[in-house]
Image (cartoon, rainbow, N blue to C red; front, side, top):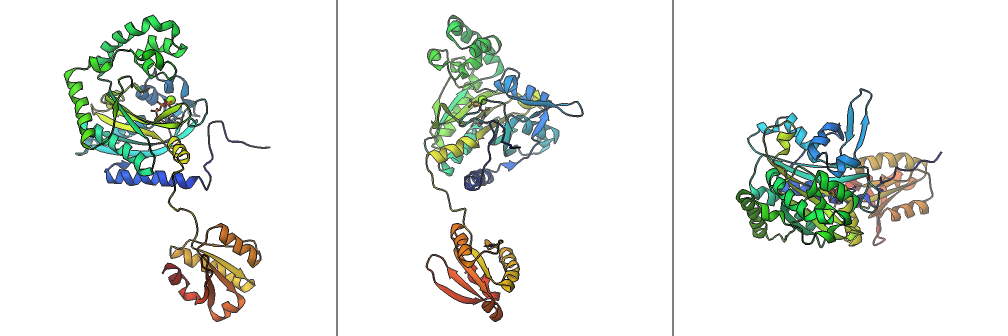
Length: 415
Ligand code: ATP
Ligand code: MG
């Protein structure tokens, strides 16, 4: 019997995982600087949460969810995105009772039933932040700044920021009529998906990947904004300008999720086939109340880590040295072999990266392993040295070697 991983999933192996650790480490460190704190919510939630929280007419809810009935007859869904779960956790744990707003972040796997291709998987990972509890446009800008800094600090080049305002549900309702008047004459030349979206959620037609060429003259939602929405959007832009964060306005940017109000934004980069969006987010002032919480506004983003890692590989960015070991302890002879377990144990306890042989191989084979592992030193323990309480320490780069007292080995390596 041979097993293979499911379509759209990946094994992240040693050699590649170091890049992941670097990227995730950056995200965590950046969040510390911005005072966002981690929240870990379950990988599955009630199906209804996502139907409500993501929206019935979204691609996610319509055709991408991994939904199943458990043995207790509950309908559960593997989380397709992070916001709904975080907001559920915020409400359930009454974080709204705290005097300061909740600035939360998450890193973890998401699940969507999609056609697998480069940059699109069925299990993928997102780094996301959610700031819940304030309407200030400065917070929208801070969230965008955090996302932008993430890309620049991991070393990704050419990431562009696009922003838009999608107004309020009332404004969208009015814009919908203008948009439909524009779309109706084109109905026959639009794709099947767009034709069905026109009937159920026309704004999402603008999100279509294949029909963009037909939308160059589409009416702009920005012309439909009221004063409050316009002021908010202008302040977001002002803050971004003050922070020197380059951005473009894209009035056709509506994003897939239903719950956005005011600001919507995307991070874009070339390099993964037809895919150009690497992350996105926006403000969702109605969502918390929508899923049964108090009327608290929020803003956040979700950044795809596979796409980030793919682009870093494409751009051949260098990684900080995460591999290698400090010392490979070579044992020669039976007595020395017994000693080596204790020696590596003690070195590791002192914070030294130590490795040894487990297969009783000859010295030459052990030295080759030390080389392959990028060991800075080898420490050779033979029966003679053992009697003297010494070990032969060899620096791999120079070939210099000298005996050191066993009791002083850790100190020598830490010098
Ligand atoms: P797309 O337009 O590419 O389908 P989306 O609008 O569905 O993206 P969001 O729901 O906004 O994406 O998710 C935010 C980010 O998560 C995306 O920009 C992308 O980087 C990542 N992402 C979304 N779906 C996948 C997937 N199936 N595989 C890998 N990454 C994904
Ligand atoms: Mg999608």
